[in-house]
Image 1 (tube, helix red, strand yellow):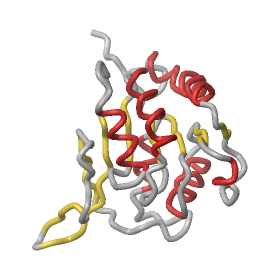
Image 2: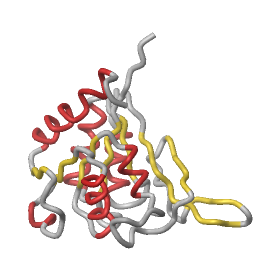
Image 3: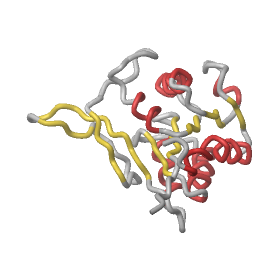
Length: 184
């Protein structure tokens, strides 16, 4: 029996601004190429890309969301406004803390980055920069997608592009070994 390994593409970006002009084509690209989508399951970019992905007819992958939780009444519940309505497979983690620094071990950003086979970074603020730093630390393939000026405060190492076709080529190369089963 052969298992169809669909690579997991993490899309990170602003939790406030949706950047729909970037998120929509990325969501469609991920859906059209049989990838799974992973986001932090919140608003902004996370909602916009998950909506574009989930509404795409004929897609094969699922929309995964890493859901922050808080302690409540002896258990853990999702933070308010999580998950967004386009998350099909919520993954609840007991990590509510926001990224304070690049090494905060209690941030769900570690889960977002480590679970992704490749990352597409859209414009964002501190949390997004933190995910880029973690991606570099954990040697994850990533590409920053959007206007160069939006990434001026980001680390210089990742590849950058404003061209969706370059993102498609990057993802094909970055995930080839996942599809063949060489890496998980």
